[in-house]
Length: 121
Image 1: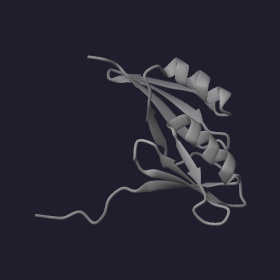
Image 2 (image 1 turned 30 degrees about the vertical axis):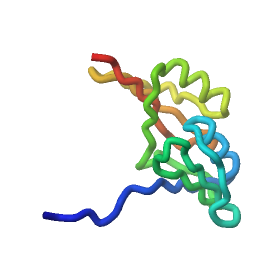
Image 3 (image 1 turned 120 degrees about the vertical axis):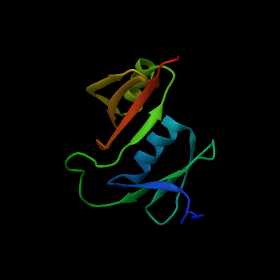
């Protein structure tokens, strides 16, 4: 029998304004913002899930991300509107699958993520 090497603890996102992104993601997911290292911010989720850490970097994001977060929502349209009021945006990209709809979003620094509305069976 094999044992696991570790457990999934969180995701670190490079960004130019850690406080602004931490505030955005805290509002989207529910959580509190703390400083983890000088200049860094971390969102501790209220549901006890993995943490999001925001690492300051001088360069802006360029190109498509190779990793993104999927956020399950009850109503994709409502989520798009709420994310827009928080400073994010819908990219206009939508994918419909038998199990649900996926809308590609961007946070205030254009990091892509998806809102996913699963259909009831």
